[in-house]
Image 1 (cartoon, rainbow, N blue to C red):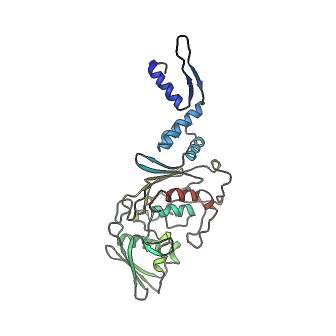
Image 2: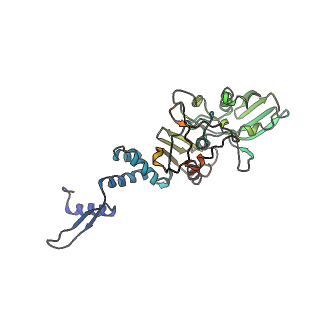
Image 3: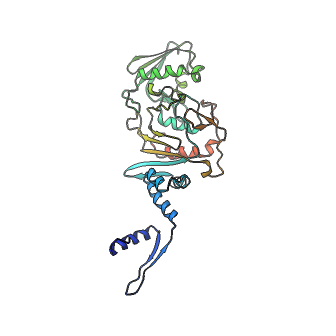
Amino acid sequence: MLFASPRHTRSILKMMTEKRWISWIPRVGRNQRSTLIRTMSDDEVKRDVASGWVKSSQYDKALEFLDHDQVAFGQLLQQNAGAQVSEGKVRVQLTYNRPFTVLSPSRPHRNSERFLIRQVHAGLVTLNEQGDVVADIAHHWEAEQNFHVWRFYLRPSVYFHNGSRVDAKAVSESLVYAQSLPYFRNELDHVVSIEAVGENTLEVTLARQDKGFAALLTDLKYSIEPRESFGSASSSTIKPVIGCGVFSLAEHTLEKMELTANDRYHGLRALTDQVSIWSLKKDLFSKQSTSCNHTVTDSVGHEATPVISHPELDYLADEGKSGGVQIRKLVSNTDVCS
């Protein structure tokens, strides 16, 4: 300001007054001095500037401007959490009190991860709100030979997030891989063969009658994965998590998870374009949080509670009292489908 013209200086002072950084009382006339009163400290001004960058999703700038003060950055994230519309795009920003584990459906998960996996992945069939089996990747299915042979007819032009086709071959490879895991062994011990009998037709032969086989495949664990994601739940190296759900996983670190809308989703595209979930330290949250404190470390260093991933046994209701409910409400309220 010392090297600015008087006119530009007045413009800067006016802008600083509008931002409530200072109080400027101009006086007109000779020998009349204007009054400048500083109303915000340096830290308050920095937080105000960083808050604007957080609102516009320029998180790196905000963190750098705050001198990488994680506490101040976390508080700004909480203050600005929610849905925002910028340049015609809907962005949802959330905070959570722990990092998320790898979003692989082929392992047990807590409730919050299960909800997020349903956004990233899709299965052959799913359940509606009434508990009926309805179409997902498969648009039709039928059972033959007294429920010993099941045939699923896939939608054409379904794609994984990496651009590869979700055809009968890819689905058979995914289910055969699942069959080899101990997590699935008891439920799939009667499966004799899983074959692609056409580009979009999958045939499953069973050793015994199973009238509820289609209902079994509605479980989250039977979400379809491409070959590139096999072993992501147990690998010592981080493998990409790829699905074909309504959102794709753009970023997943200990500090942040970012989901982006899948423009090629086979159902209705989400209205929300981007979801960012920041993992903050527990001491930044209310002391009334009731999250479970039992921990276990997974293959990428995240902490989580091991819970059986089966609808009848997934009873972690305590997590629903904390951040999990917030995630469900904010994402589902802004999406066509959740």
